[in-house]
Image (tube, rainbow, N blue to C red):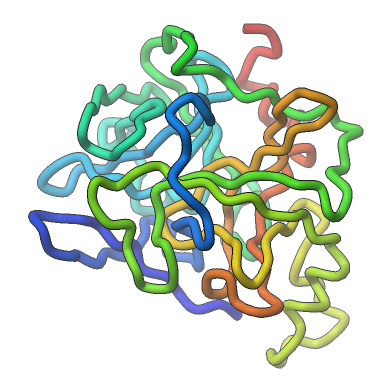
Length: 274
């Protein structure tokens, strides 16, 4: 199975490598993409933990003025108290215009154990709702019936590594890359290549989805961030960046938590109406 990916953090001009809080093979940066325009992805957020300063470790998305959607492996077991966490709403360059927001509650899906087992999804309740504007917006959750068929052009965004073990350089701009959806059975067959797992073991579960190519993918540091697709003129969040093996490797698309599989759980906490 995929090996542990470290979390590379910029610190005083040097590179400090920390183990990600979830201690699973998480995804992090954007490979094969480009800097995001300032007027795009207004739902993108940065999760911060305190390490001399409040440092980025995962992404997330604003799905309600007071709620952030992210990956469970970003938050446990390393971060258990909301006092150890801050959220930065849409920011073009990390750390340059920080206005960090405290978190009231951390809610990890009760079925989560590891990213590979599934249910890699979590919610953060902000202490105060965000003021929505042209710069800060919520992303729509998909209807339960939406399948995001293979080949659907979607986008993944974040501040993670730009390739295996290559950190995003200053000024740490938000990156974006367009990735195609890969059908689950095809993705599962790809992940069975070159590993000893039996063919009868499902690696890519029904509650997951795959996206990416050999040249375009998420990578280290993007965990928890959104995979968004424009369907019939509306942006929808299809997935949450979860795990994978390497970044943009052959036969290893990025694996995402499938949002439609967890709508009931999300709406136990998050109001459907703004």
